[in-house]
Image (cartoon, rainbow, N blue to C red; front, side, top):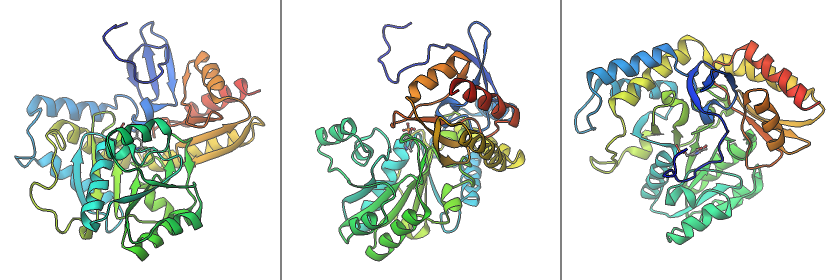
Length: 379
Ligand SMILES: Cc1ncc(COP(=O)(O)O)c(C=O)c1O
């Protein structure tokens, strides 16, 4: 234990030493099944050999140079991301985290529209920078934004089509929404709600931002969740699983949004660094070659169908491998019981929702282990 470290999240009493695929090994040599995925980050599983090789080779070649020099890896990853996103989301900016990607998206929307007001969704979670705190739901986050003098967003009720349409007027710069709300419990927006957001933004000349930090990069049925919902935003942000665990954030925008950007308008010292980009290239290649998006859909459906048959599960939220099991009892108790069986899962902002976000490579056998354990602890 270090007395120097400030507390961040409530911790599992488990010291991870190594990881392979969906398994973590602790300091006593015990193996743990990871249905938490290092917080939805271990997209290709822990320590995928191709990702490890790409990171090692790049680190031995050139650890870092900033964007003041062009770099082949950065260009290749930008092309891969642009290729993976639906039209017209084709312009890519790299930074280092999810919050930073959202901060840039909100800033770009305000710059393009010349407006300030943002509309967000109740239960939405977008980060801990000042602008992202202001659009995140929850008193402690909003207080942080208030203390910094940042105007708060207007929050509309989740999945309320009429409310989102009414909230967007010609003073609104952007609507920011997670197609599947992560922290709220993998609550998936209805396609009608996202379509209403799209229509309202088009009607009033506002920008539609999808925060896909948690639900993107193949977790919910397509590389960009937007495609699975068949609603295309003006800006989408990714982070978490994009480089299998190396820090990365990305904002992808349309040419219309970025047409007037000049050299120096965007920037980041570390964003687009060679090592995270090498990890990102390997991650996308592995996702494609091993058909991990199809796997996430197939294994996610298997877990969903089995969970729906457990009487204690009242509803299954989410898509693909971002699932929220709404329970008839506190999720924290169930998480603890699963921990006793050496299975890691997540809780959420809703005390009754247990969150599952395993690697996209989670196998049928691993899903069966999880399902059997859920049946046991919920019986
Ligand atoms: C939907 C969503 N947006 C933004 C963030 C912030 O990402 P980061 O912690 O990388 O800043 C998170 C992190 O959990 C998230 O789930």
